[in-house]
Length: 321
Image 1: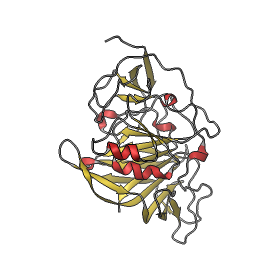
Image 2 (image 1 turned 90 degrees about the vertical axis):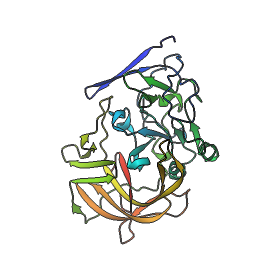
Image 3 (image 1 turned 90 degrees about the horizontal axis):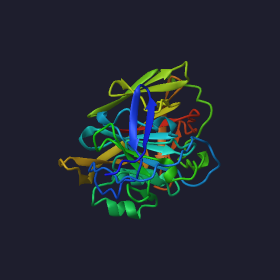
Image 4 (image 1 turned 180 degrees about the vertical axis):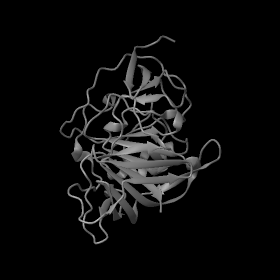
């Protein structure tokens, strides 16, 4: 196989070499096949623009071999979801800016389709899905972008074993970031409520994963730790959310199983429930409500007033209620 040009992303003490080229068709599963080589993509600097279209949502691997991530610090919103075996996966949403690369990219889940209904026909970048789920993805009100659909959009990294080495070049899918107006989530931003409990560290646990958020007053942001290790990125821009939401939701078995026979949990994000909103080193009790799939998720105080988020990246951890 002819080798293509190499793009090297360096940061946080880690280098990730990406072989430029498309994935050569991909498939419905994370099968780890190397892509066919192709032309190197053109540079695409991170930038902010007027709204140019829908948001980009990328399904990001969060298994330990997939770390450090690439491009995660540039996301406007990061959703944390439980998957098979109590592990976790991330759904990163981009509107304000597009990094040069995002990944590693992994497969979609049924819950993603409901979660993404909050956005107006978003672009979903993912590395495949269970065969029985693919027709649902095709019928969903979104633009599905698995490997092989858009030439040059995906590349395989040379420094990691498959399936933890698939990366997306976002500018191959979107000409420009759509802008914050595309974030039709129902979130409100502004001053914090007058009450709140001092809480500088919060850990959220899944059966086989945990996330710790620690307030850093010097940066006015939260530091993120994944399974006890500080989150880092290959591009030197680690995730630093200004707001962390622990959203308590119902999880139930879905009709899908992985190759080991483990059931995929379905996370219900339509409905109502409780939450905690972390900002400024304090925790605020909240209620969340999303009556219909096409609605955004509203977070309010127990008294019914909008609970504002701080400007900056938001992490939403979907925790079993």
